[in-house]
Image 1: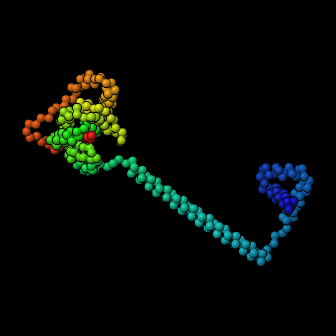
Image 2: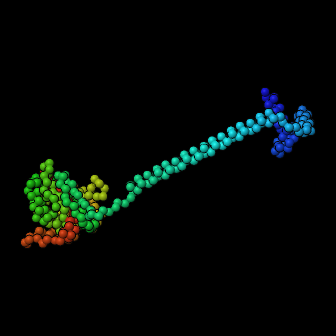
Image 3: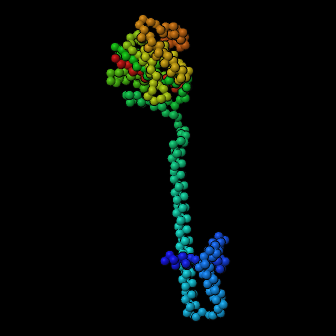
Length: 326
């Protein structure tokens, strides 16, 4: 089988050589075979003679049945070609449709992702109404909203934890001061789990009045700790053994960074003073800073002067939670 196949291949090459249809490289190979193989040379001569004999035959008209058979064969070949061409065209159209659908799906997916990203990173649209500030103390009392612009230099939020053997008496002083000076828009005294909790929202002047009242009862406290809120939720700066003067100076700081720095310095000094019995470490420092902020004594000379609503609301920049326990 391989021999016949090889001979057929050689005949094909030789016929192409005779008809001058071979490429240059194939023609060179055939000439090399003819020069080195006598059998191939004789086969070339036989094919050349056959070509000459066939070329010398006269032309004759083919029988009608042969002509019809050839036409039928050509017609079937043309039909098959048309069907193949139609199938190819339909295949291309189908492929193009699938590509268009895939592109549309990708565009829709990109649009959806863009919408999701926009909803995440888009800036908040300011509402027409004023901002609402809601406080939720442990007693679930919600303070009314204050649509005011708070001065960054005075805004403060923190907690004061006091312990004493007479919480009822000191709590009454704090509550009375809050009520008389209007230092909170919510209930001033909330008792919860044996604690007196006071929610104070006031101006710098109102805080001075509160600290003046507390200064009178401060020596009767067992401990006093102040915790200052920071920008990190749940992370506070604590000052142990804090005094009213230190509280006033910390809150009077012109920036949050300054307040935190003062709080840490006071905490270090208080801790050092507590570890050295009989030493008065804070006396020189408090003597230098005593003039920074003076705590005035409350003075009642008749009915209080009512401020304009905007001015009164604008002064409420200090939020202080006082927790008094035994």
